[in-house]
Length: 448
Image: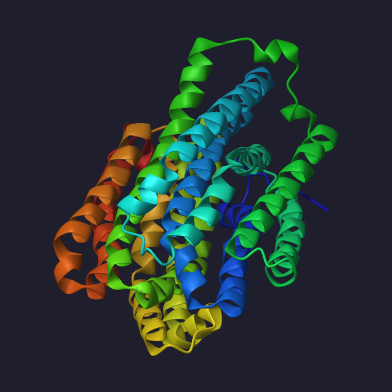
């Protein structure tokens, strides 16, 4: 089986799609961790437990986003050395990735232990579900290092054009997650904590399988002892890239956490409906996220090779792919919103179904804006434009804060529905200007 895709030569559309497809499968099964939890908890434990999971979902997404962001950021530097054909620097970047990953994981675990319960209180989590919420999120965050490990190993494989094998291992782990969810909740009566334990075990399995595969099949990614020697410039580059992507994702998720605090004031059924809608919208937007992730590696490799013309064409093709999916998403997730929410939530409450369907159908209509936003942001990240992408994330954070503090208290759930499409539009305008005015991109404009 062919596991590597040549992103430096040949058809851009074919190479992007070939590289993105395994990432799409990976994202689908990554989401199954959360969606399986949601479906099983809703079906076997009821609306209250579903709301408890939803009340801490934004916090969980923050940790996942940060882990994924750091892993992708570190791998972008590795991909740049791979594109430049510099194997020595590539291995040093892998060694630095291990060191940085361990330090960040330990720091986040300690921080989470200190702030989780006060944060749930600060987010105005209803008293009848706060203990369940804490049981779930504290269990997951205790093992942040497992989450970091998988995202780092998968990112390194993607850096050398291998987006297949991490998916194979993730599929195995996702199946195990579903089985353990049902077993822990229905047989061991562990409640919502059982879903968290199942997630951690499944993530550990996927990380372990990834690591063993790299050891056996990817010698280019195996550093020796000398590669662990401290290189100030390299560590600065990697810390800047990894933390900028991690912070970019965390800032976005922090906005979602703040938004969740406003949603938590609207009642348990509203939280349950919104939780189901967020799970559904993650699938709606998944192909857009996948294409942008593939584009980041594509741009990083070609930027390292100095091929700006190919970078410009890649971004243009990625937008066309996103546009096609946006039309499909609007048709499927817009028109079938109510049925989808009913399936995910397993609820018969009209409030849950109405809330979830309204959010899903409205946000699906703005998929094309999100697609352009994600493509441009990841392309800029692939070129190392860390500050610009951080500014984009700050715009999103500020926008969500404004909605949470000024609009949602008066517009109620309608304000939640309008929030993200409005913010996406502003961000997209900023990124269009930043990308096409970039000196590297402009220097190749005459070749188009």
